[in-house]
Image 1 (cartoon, rainbow, N blue to C red):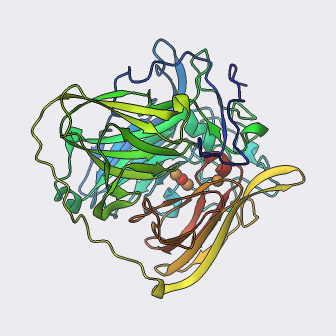
Image 2: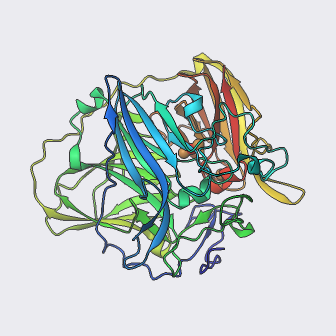
Image 3: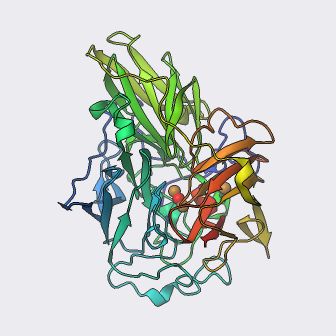
Length: 512
Ligand code: C2O
Ligand code: CU
């Protein structure tokens, strides 16, 4: 077990509070954390293709253990894509396919999911589609699930167990902020916590014609909370710290693992030097269990131009931004009313003390700016309730069976073999999601959706555009329209609180 953390700071696992507003428990750091807003902001490196042909860009990523310096002067062992956390950013352009060869040099199996990608089932990262390290005994996985009848390796769309595999991404989809992360059955929470997450930024010609800020003024922000022990390590309360056999976390963390150190692109509370111009920020909440309400202290508003699955039809201005796990908000921040020397702090209104702070911008210079935010962005197709063929309801709730606590969908723990919904390709369905016990952010693979109702009312301010993740409060409900397009086969939908996901809050749907 990782040493040096105390798990008693806050527990709102059963009853969400208005201060933290995240299900879970904080592991308090015992490391001396850096003073906020002292470390320089950085952007994850953009990965270069190893090869290109007429249709495709080829990339290679090795997943490996590496040492990082996250807390100045301390060494943190991470699991990283190419040994970095965040992983390198892949940048793609509609019309070109991307193939990523992932090689697993970690001590345990992994699965890669391109979150938001419209991807064939055998490349989507089904939780049992393992890429195994060399020497891994695949038979050891059998019967090791947290739930009886949970048989890893069976019933997945393609049982590929190899050290290396090519993930094929057609990316015939609109410009959007996508991300890739680990999705191994039962162990996604700890493996993402250790660092397996990166950006995939997808462009298209329509987006490029808009005149939004580009280049080094188009900036990804991966926000994630972590905990640091005195030895620099990032402890995680796994029942099996080696992540080999027994899944799950110690009891008190069943609602979620929260850290007290907020990282942006892997840096604790960084400070970014900006010019007094417009910037585009692609905000991603890559935290396991933490939700944020972001605000710019003494600063401008967020002008939202995109959501999870692409650009909006028109910009939307927000003074605060609620960002649940896995959600992306593509925003423009205009610093032009600020003078050189001004400091603008991004705060988290859902946080307490150290988690109240996210990052800081310091205006250091004036520069030319020919970017703009047009009043109309892109034409969005509106799905219509008239086209709905099937309505389904999914209740996300905590249940316990023989004293074992589980997170379930419609009372069922996830099994790779079951199918909760058979959907007909290219038809529209209405899915109603309900959250019980605590809040749950619900993510559907393959097909983005449109939120048409929230708690029986109009959609909320953060529900615009095409979404792939919807943030539900405790007791909350959202109705979405979704058209299962692009591919046929078996995919998952699940809660993106990664501890809930690992403890079975997931279902399968099959597009036929
Ligand atoms: Cu972001 Cu099923 O994942
Ligand atoms: Cu959940």
